[in-house]
Image (cartoon, rainbow, N blue to C red; front, side, top):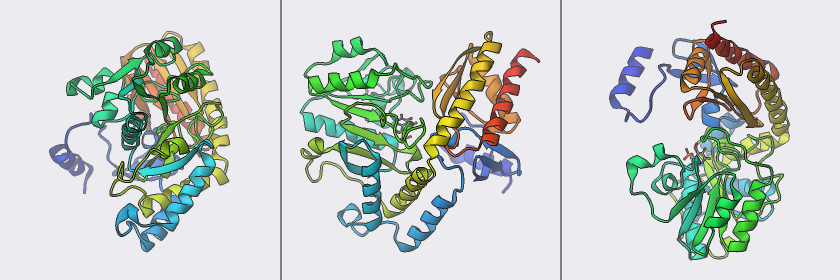
Length: 400
Ligand SMILES: Cc1ncc(COP(=O)(O)O)c(C=O)c1O
């Protein structure tokens, strides 16, 4: 099939939810992908923070092949036991914060958040949910209700009742809103889609203490930040914060659609049979892929590479910010979740288009930002190749 034919069919039959990029991707390997014409691109989006080990990683392929030959979906789905699910549960219990001992597998991040919100209401017997402005928690009706961005909400009003928003990072604002009607506070440790917003150092710990005092549950959405993206297994791993629910997806299975949520023993004690479920939840194929991905992350200490490559990239980008203050507003990030904020949306669009012309995918975010979240095992020379393309594209703005 030609590229033109691919585009024609997609344009005719796919629901037009996306402003498309006119490139048709056929295959990938590591941090590179190739289009139907054979043109090579560097992927600094990792499929939106998903392909944490790069494309076509052998650990993923072998899990798909080996488990695919054994069994993909159990008889009676989650009602029967599965050795690969048990192995994954055991591994997850080792990497999660120690108080999060109960885990359930979902198919996506939105589904994990949706379930955490639903269960927090049941467990506390309260209705209200506090979220943060500029957050992103998914596109189902309840996660859109928890998402603090008008563009994801306003066309679908009225959304779910009993959701309120506070400013991300503002402890006093949260204090003023916490009362005995609040079932849960949901937030991302670093707002990803909101433009890689990194809060002050002890913000999450303070949120955790306030929730505890108030009898509200803390749902930490690590869908984007989890599995080494920010240089530790979870963004909360080095923090002293008591999380009640932690939600996950994206990097968990390196590209296979999979997610999870974990909860404390205390929360789990209040769960009853039938409170939640799902046909594909914890399917052996997804479990096998996630098991191999997480094992690889641990065995090869990929988080160390994330810290090193993230520092390298932020160092260079901070230099650009000093050199080009007339076009770059800010540079920020943690590990390999980074943003370059421009003075205008037009500037971010030009840079993003120029990167594509030069063979590199980046993700324009919130109009005037470019979000960079490449594979976590990216090599130094690949990072430098990407930074060189970005810098040349930034310089195009100056006509130099
Ligand atoms: C922080 C966060 N939560 C939830 C989601 C939704 O995840 P999914 O697209 O897998 O439903 C996303 C997706 O970008 C996300 O970044």
